[in-house]
Amino acid sequence: MGIFNKIKLSFERRKLVKKQLDQSIPNYQNYSLKDKTIVFVNGGIPTHDKDSGSNRLKEIIVAYKNQGFNCIVCTENAFRDNSYIQYYSSLGIIVYVETNQFKNYLEFLKSIPKVDYVWYYSPNTFKENFNKISKNLPGSKSIFDMVDIHFLRYQRAIELDPTRISLRKKYKKYFEIETKLAKKADYIIAISDTEKEIMKEYIASEKLLTISNIHYPKIDKSLTLSFENRKNLLFIGSAHSPNIDSLYFLYKEIMPIVWNTLPEVKVNIIGNINEKIKDINHPNIIFAGYVPDIVDFFVSNKIMIAPLRFGAGVKGKIGQAFEFYLPVITTSIGAEGMNLTDHKNAIIRDNPLDFANSIIDLYQNKELWLKLQNNSENSLSSFSLENLIYIIKHNFK
Image 1 (cartoon, rainbow, N blue to C red):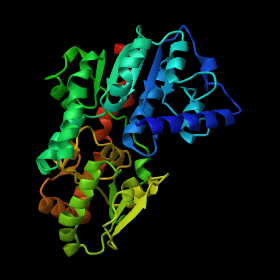
Image 2 (cartoon, one colour; image 1 turned 30 degrees about the vertical axis):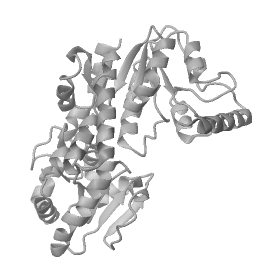
Image 3 (cartoon, rainbow, N blue to C red; image 1 turned 180 degrees about the vertical axis):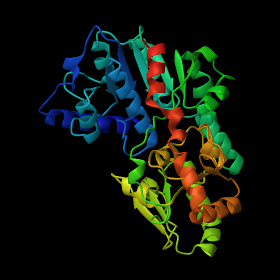
Image 4 (cartoon, rainbow, N blue to C red; image 1 turned 90 degrees about the horizontal axis):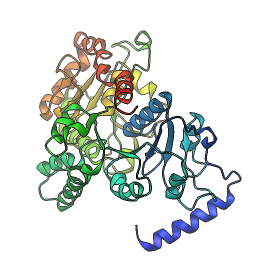
């Protein structure tokens, strides 16, 4: 951030702080010295209803709270009128907000009687905050939540587009953070056992833990619509580069084949990817944008499609589909780290022709569709809340 932006933000902060009638830290009166304390540091307050990463972090925060920890969410430039701050406050979480009590979040953290753990969400947050927080909280242990292996994502993107210099720069940046700076952390969190094995090449295995997405059924299966009463395809995508590439791959190489056989099939797209895509204009491509309540999309569409060509980590959208008993067609990248078996939990195809033919087949094949739907709940077993609670109890107590 440039010096002028910093000055501008400082003036805006003072103005907003002055307007606040309540200058206290939400729920700080509930801090208990006898309980362990964990601080979650993030670049922004987690928007749990907008992206799967934030939803995972929300589940982790709540799990620690339910295990008796003082849980503190800490991000800069956070103010009480933010709806997400109000949400976390309603859960009893201590939330740092800008007030006239503290000059900044570091001053607030230093005022806490005891901090046992600091959880850094994402490599950028870890790089920007680790040294200064460790210096101010020398008695705390650090937890670096990778979210996914970013350097692996860019390595795969380079394989698809080797001429883009920006991809090489990002690969180098994240490789430095995730394989070198990460060694300073006490714990490194991988999002799947697959990524944990990859990281063992760079990080001592005793520091590595797997904490994946948290998924559980969100609807009674008996309330879902039948095969005959569903239609169309569901695509979920944020403005994240793998999602953008995935949508163009779908639009240019997959759907033209599908439409030759099933010309009426529409693709319903939810998520803020519409803010980045301006050159797709087709009557069968429907951009819904951000949708606060996604249930109707999951129960009315016939198939979830995730034709990802690069990326890393565990794909929350696929877990979300299983939560609503919606059959999935994805790629090897989409299925990575999710313990999926082709034609049992999902259809897994990488070639555009094969992917398109699988859509055509599953769209009309009730027997296969029901088989995948019936296996949805079992597909969530690796992502249970019980797994997370076990890790907390055996590593952070």
